[in-house]
Structure formats: structure tokens, C-alpha cells
Length: 248
Image (tube, rainbow, N blue to C red; front, side, top):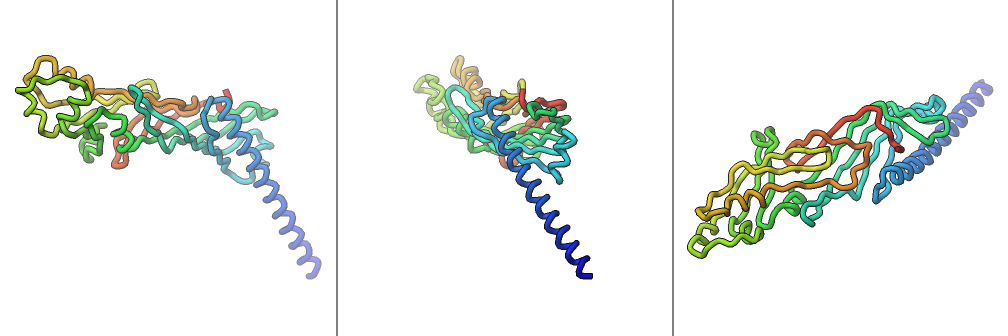
């Protein structure tokens, strides 16, 4: 009986040492992976990398990792000199194959996601315009609400309106813009209807101002965004990929 207890103690100790060694190896691998991804993808900040699955050492022996989660900061979107933050930039990578020297890694499949809040969308919008949630029905069609003082919008756009028509600018305006993605890194907002002013050329100029594009800068090649949804919190982007090279 005493021998059995000793054997159990030895097993527990060895198991603990294995787990400790496994976790230490994971930490080292995550640190190295973060550094490698930053340099290979040209990121401005080092990403957070989490390697899931246990035991890790067994996965390494098989040159195959079950799942890797990558979170990236420092991503921005710009339009005409205005810069806003892109948050919650993440990639979930599955069935990652590594070579014998661990110098390359290919993910069998990957899901990418990112978000731009309405607060940041407003910062990117033309002067006088506020971008907000358009309600469930319009959001389902990929639309956001754009509203604000018409006078501020016209003034911010540098549009000259003759004095007799200035009284028309005292009201607020509301329109709805359809959001779409172009090329995986360009966000397009296109308004449907704007207030009509009886001044030649003003309507077209207003449309040009309210319709604008945001370019997402610094996205790594591991994240391919091809869908956008208008939610209560902001615009959420998502995308999938296969055979994604993490180091090239």
C-alpha cells in the first residue's frame, strides 16, 4: 500500500513537471510567433498570440497545431487625412502545419474579424455629420444613419450658398448610407437621399461630401475581410481564408 502511494506521488510529480514544461514551451512558442508575425506582416505593434490545445509538445511533435488565436492592435482607417481606430482585429487559425525547422507555418483555415465603432465612424465623417445605428431593419440591409445640422455640413464642405437660401440650412438633415467593402481594405459609404437645395450644383457637391471611403491600413495578409455588418455597436467586418501563410 505504501509503495502504491509512493508510485502515485511520483506520477503526480512527473505529470506536474510535464505540464509545467508544456506550458513553458507554449509561452516560448507564442512569443516567437508574435515576433515572427510582426516582422513578416509589417505590423506596427507586436500581436498577441495564443496557441490552444493540450498537450502542446505532442502537437509540435506532429508538426501540426490545432488552433492559434492572433489579436492585433495599432490598425487604423483613414480618409482625406482623418484617421480612426480599427478595433478587435483578430484571426483564428486552425490546423496549422509547421515545417521541421518551424520557419514556416500554413493554416488550413482562418477566420478574420475587425470593428469600427460609430464614434470612430463619426470622427471619419464629413464635418457636421454624425454616423449612428440605423435600426434593425435598415442595419439588416447594411445601412447606417448619417445626420446632423445641414448648415454645418455645407460649411464644412466649403460650399457657398447665396444669402437668400441660407435660411434653408437651419434644419437638420438625416439620410442613410449603404456600407460595402471593396478589396478587403476599403470601406465605402454611399448615401441614398440628401436634402435638395434650389441652388445649381449644390446637391452634387453635398453628395460628393457625404459619400466617402475609408481605407483600412496595416491589415496583415493573414486577415482577409470580405463581409461587413452594421450592428448596434458599429461596423463589424469578417472574412475567411484557406491555406493562409503566416510567415510569408
